[in-house]
Image (cartoon, rainbow, N blue to C red; front, top):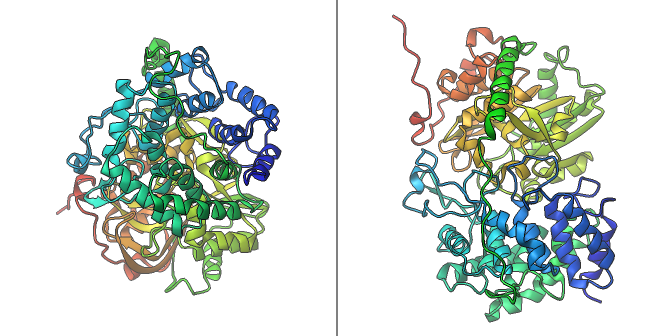
Length: 640
């Protein structure tokens, strides 16, 4: 019996009543995990013929009139699952006529050209910004993962020589590191080198298999081989095994594959792994690899390469009228928006993470309990979990999350959920475990929810600074009685500071906005932050300022001890206080100025009652990010 058979049986047991699969057991079916499950089951078709048929039928419920595929009821622009579905259909034997509309839909989707904005100015000599690939969402930029899936699917359809495929392959190689691997698309951000990621590297290698000979392909194979040999993460290992299985020309790779099979099988034996990871594991250890291309450039019945026209961005006259009406309505609601019940902020000293932080937080919360009781409430904690680097203080410290969970329990919360949707890494399970947060959650019996794959809900955008009519937010976040933002005290090279307001970027699902959530950056980071906070603000904000980050935050700055925990119900007041602690006048931070103007909270120091330590007693001068002056507002004029 194949190593994958027990895993396939578990996959079938995890199927939803509609025949599809969600990212985790019991969640709504989504095209991506459904496709991965079908690809895994395709390696043993005879015993699993009926689940395969049911899964294909479930996929059709996500089919759009134009031949595209996306999560039903989700953001219309997020058509990135179309290419994954096309590849799956072809791998399972779909004929040319059956997939013709979907091929046209993939070919009709183009990424936008990258504009010369501060975010991309330093990339112009690093990558070719003129190359057109595929975006996560329509009208957005091209990224490695959706471009890789599109190239893989179109090559499987026999369109190897199509100009779009050739340019897509060129884009993938252009984004790869000379030293090996690739991330979602940026090698350099503001002069600082980024790092490769195993998942996108594997997909890049699958897309270019057999098509090009290039030193960056060889380097990517070497990177993935070295990373996999020392990794203990199932997601990373499974993708590495799948990709290395089609790049096994060298002895070192061939000798590593049996070891990877054993590691994947051992990790997959855990009954608690997600459906998404289970499908990847089954694919990795299967006797055959359905990700290996079989069709070549010239199939017996070549598909029509005519591209469908991309969807119109404007939506017509009626859509524009509706947008203006919604804008007027939102403006009226904004003028009536009540401010938070109190803008008081409490600053407490905490010299180290080894202090009794739960006691410190309990003393702080006593000031806010009358306005925000937690007893009987469903509480969602949103820490800042971006990337894991052992030598950097990037994330909210797990010991602070531990103390907040303890506080919620002591206050009688009915349910506690820790949730995050990182924009940099899709593999959030890796971040949770490596950061130490997983051990905290296990000890408390609190579950973690990946917001990026949570069910999205369409809500009216109450900020409108991005000019988006609606936002798609996490159902879990929207369903919280109390949303707690738990940011790190950090500088940010585009936003100035990243505190409780910026932390809510992670409440928008990646399945709607991609990785990174670059469309929101493109529409303006301050504008996006304020729109999110206007639409669904945090009810309680607690800044981990015991050790913060100065300089080139949010990833590449330097640790800075501040020794404080900052708490309040007004997120603007809390963030303004955090900025003052770091020595940056909040009146220079666009996010805080716009948020105050939108009545999310108060920014003026005279309007923020201060409990605990005074700002002057704990304030320091944090080094500013490089070139941040171009992002900040001018200093306030001094009156004579």
